[in-house]
Length: 312
Image 1 (cartoon, rainbow, N blue to C red):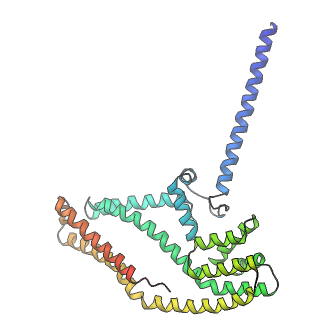
Image 2 (image 1 turned 120 degrees about the vertical axis):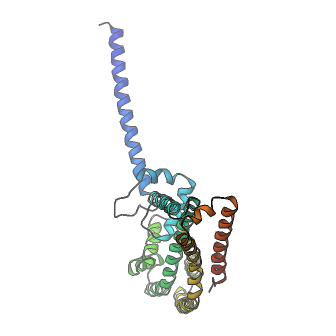
Image 3 (image 1 turned 180 degrees about the horizontal axis):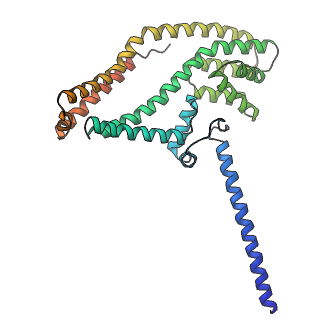
């Protein structure tokens, strides 16, 4: 072979070797990036350990969208052991099932109505879970303030006191304070970490406690006396909230019974006169009448919930 041919072959082999190395490095970089994205969510926290996660591909694609980020933010405030992809898949399956069941049992017109109701119910479930978790956290605030006061009185720093409270308290306070401790270990300030906790579980009691801790950490002062007084106040507010919730329990049950009364009426009509709902929703006037009736039931539910909502 001549010299130009040998040089050409050598250059070709070198280019192929570099191409293989480049593809190998590119594939390794993509796998490392995917693993990093799985470990670090938008909130900067590691993925929860435990069971094997499902719908990983859907979860990765969903997190890149605005809808996925909103779902992830809501799930972070509920404490549910679900990823955005899992919640979206389960919600889609439930909506499809409700659509098919309503269309089969009642009439085809009620399929989309049941689907929209399923979407609203999924969002309402997240809001209810968040309110329930916030309520449980508020009930633990007196114990949290007491532990912080005792630890501070013993001469420990506020960061160390928060870590002790995270180990001593049960969920959800222990889990939430564990997140705060994790962010403090990563170098975030106390004000930023506690402020994120107050945004995640909004309540007046937690806002007062966070303000007390932040001001004490920033300007100093008698933090032990402040926490002692705050503990007594939180205990009194806890009892007041329990009394108010007991007084309004009957009104709350009435609000939730109204939609079921409407659904029961539809099932009764269809049982007494088979095919009546299909004939009623077969025309435009019947569809409008059904939608107006459903809207009135929804309006009654919202009105009762608004009137019975008392901020303490």
